[in-house]
Amino acid sequence: MTMLSSPPTDLRQSTAVADALSETVLPAVGGDAPLATPALRSAYAIVIVVPMLGLLAAIAMSWGFGMQPIHLILLIGGYILTGLGITVGFHRLFTHKAFTTSRFMTAFWAILGSMAAEGSLFIWCGVHRVHHQFSDTHADPHSPHAVSARAVALAEAQSAHVDAQRKASIVAGDAEPAADHDHDHHHHDHDDHAPGFRGLVSGFWHAHAGWLFRAHPADMERYIPDLRNDPVLRFVDRFFFLWLAIGLIIPGVIAGLVTQTWTGAALGVLWGGLVRILVVHHITWSINSACHLWGARDYVSHDHSRNNLIFGILGLGEGWHNNHHAFPTSARHGLAWWQFDLSWIIIRGMELVGLARNVRLPSAERLAAKRRTA
Image (tube, rainbow, N blue to C red):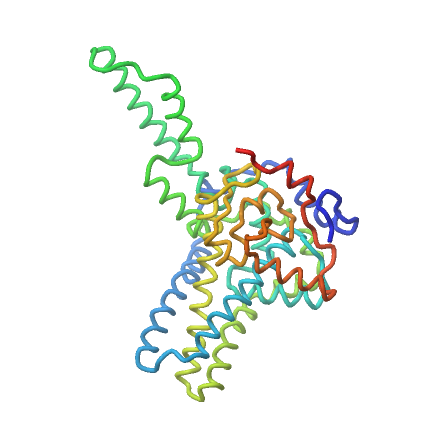
């Protein structure tokens, strides 16, 4: 294993891309970004709605036919496999270079991640690198805290109106002057959030799925030159829709062979395909939304990332999000012994059998330096 305090030489060039961009300033791409093209918005609407319709169809068909054990196995197994394609592959291997592996395993993880239907490899990794550079600022593509300029203007107008009413009441002798610290705190609340419950819901939706309908960050290609230079990754990215289709066909074929019925095969496509995609999508999106709102902050980071127990488990280790933002290139996100991290277990297993190399972990000194004391 490699401690993060001393990255291996062969990783320096590939990880230098994100480091070099740390001084780059891009236009706001979060809630202020323009809407995506009508074609792209329609595509993402289909990606969101069709799996939901698939769930309804699966329930309706299973009502008479019954949900066979094979369908449950395909749902859970597909969720774990394609989920790991995102967490181990798209995220830790390709975006953050947390370890290296063979060309075969590179293709394996890239194809599994593509089957999760969260977008092509290059788009996924590019957006995520932008997210880390501008986490929880207005340039973050999917932060629940970076509200749109319109919401901020509304908050400021409302604050000014309240202040004007208070001053009028004071002049009339109907109220006491507000304490200075209360006044300052009232304004500070609007730095990161839209006002009240409505702002919380709006921010949550934007971080969860609303950001998909916004244009991609400008000049995102600059964030992925290392990925584009890899012929294996170029091949996988080019045929994204093929892997997506295969991810739907395989569970149908398996269920059809096991049940020996067309209905069983159709339910295999629904449970192991569309419903599996629905589950993986919303767990992944919850890392963007819930894990920037609720949970513990064990380490110092420059954003609002949180360690969330629920999504630490359901997200295959991704929910230990504050740990991840404090140490982005660490292959292990569950840094405490009790923080279950299935993705790390897989990477560690790969390392033990020689399939993963240059596995990066934070040193004890870095952990201690960044640990919050209060």
